[in-house]
Image (tube, rainbow, N blue to C red; front, side, top):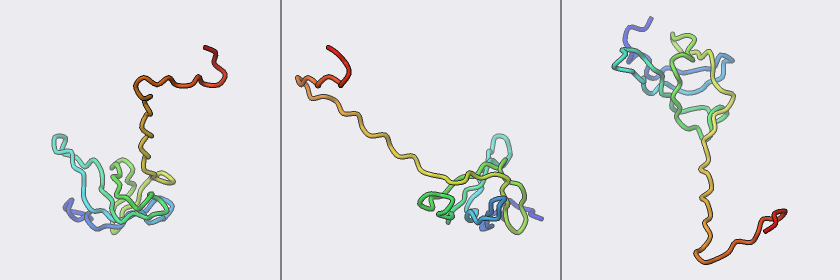
Length: 104
């Protein structure tokens, strides 16, 4: 049984399907509420997390903690958001051609 929060550091994290997710690198604590908000996971499995990026797992997703951490939920795949392409502004004084299907 865990006696200190620091004992979570280094534990391996698995999905409820038994797939390795990564290792606990840090604990996210809500000091004002005196509770654990989540776990910060590193060395993530590239099959689950795009580019093996670090992820934060909400504490409510944790099913069990012992020698390992087992999650009750984890998305099938975590992808990073791609930035939206910048809007192209017309050059000053230039008239844009009409969009097909629209009359002027």
